[in-house]
Image (cartoon, rainbow, N blue to C red; front, side, top):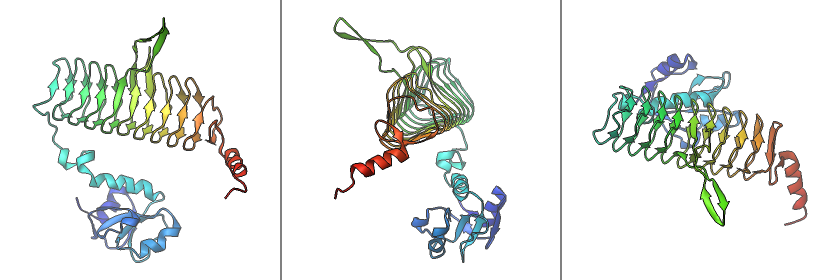
Length: 327
């Protein structure tokens, strides 16, 4: 994939300066210092570093050109570089390398399954009874999709994912390798000294534009559904227990654990290794810093930290006082 500066400018309706015929072979970070590539400048403090680099072209904010370089202007450079980067990843995001849908002969597909004619099914995929797979979905090798699952348009399910019965993916959902959707929730009742399994009769629903990172797990509900709201992004090695409900546009970072029947509002951010007890509610626009422990409801928006959870400003003051005078 190669594209000229003027072609990029036209594609994204950008103002630019520099040689319109400059050919760009890819995108890179500033620290990569890759000749022939496009990078971005998100802060004034790196303008001098960008100017001294071997990178020939940058996306930068209007009025903030990189001296001696070709410049594409956009008020949000990192957003635009993400859009441009998709052009250089055809094997992942559906460019020319995957323009022709295919159904590998080793796939096992139940007769009752409804697979869109333009969906791609990889090697050794297993698709159960009454499954529905929507237009342009891409199911990579060694995926297992059990009975009555529904997968929406333009979904990508990478290798070795498992969707248990009745799981549902909206449109444009991405499951990274090894994701488990719809496994049984962790439910047992102690009776006469033995742990008796509680049947998990519900399902999992991932709404549109959700992404789930590698080896993360989302358990099915006990009775109704575990639901992940539209646009929520889940990192690697995250666990959502049964009956959890997240709002829209949440960010759950690596090794987060959300206990059963917890409810997260919209735009909640849980940084790495945050954990919750069960049956708590976290309101809209709450951010919890790494290793925070949520032990009760957090109704007010803000930034929180610590275990038990406190407003981050108070927690920082407490830590400073705790360690004052120590070397």
